[in-house]
Figure 1 (cartoon, rainbow, N blue to C red):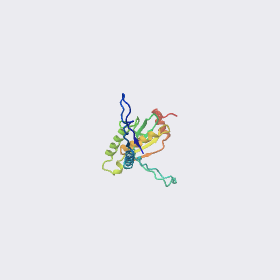
Figure 2: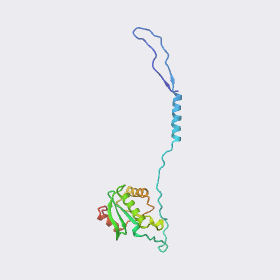
Figure 3: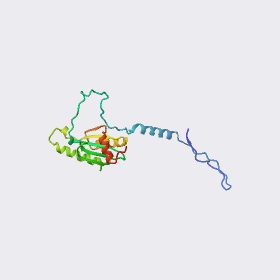
Figure 4: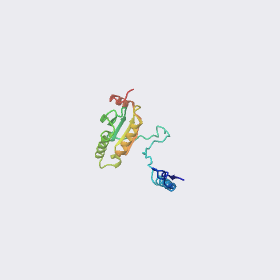
Length: 190
């Protein structure tokens, strides 16, 4: 039983004799029970934050013979490529790597970096293909991570795809020519 003692209740003061008073005891058992009931109630009724994850479609593990593999023809004026380098920087270009329409240009992450470029390119593609099939009005983004980039950089780029509402994007292996492009910009050292 929990109990609160309030003192000794009497004694001698300057020669006077006082009668001894009984201690006032307060039983705290009910208050402790109430506290635990409240803690239990709030723990069970609050919703804990659940981890959120982004859906990412990955290819099948089965390798098909080369004659059965489908080649996806992608128009170069709808394709933007992001090359993730070191130092939390990236290079982007628009079009083919051998003959880019625009770029390559070094850029950082965030709303004033790659997000602004992605939103601008989405508008360019949408206006260029206005009146055609709605699926052809989407920007296609190829994400290519070098060996010097970090996992966080890849996650940041995937977050930018979700924020900018890019419907078609893929994580693809980087080519030696693109590594050379990164090296030229100072974002890849051998």
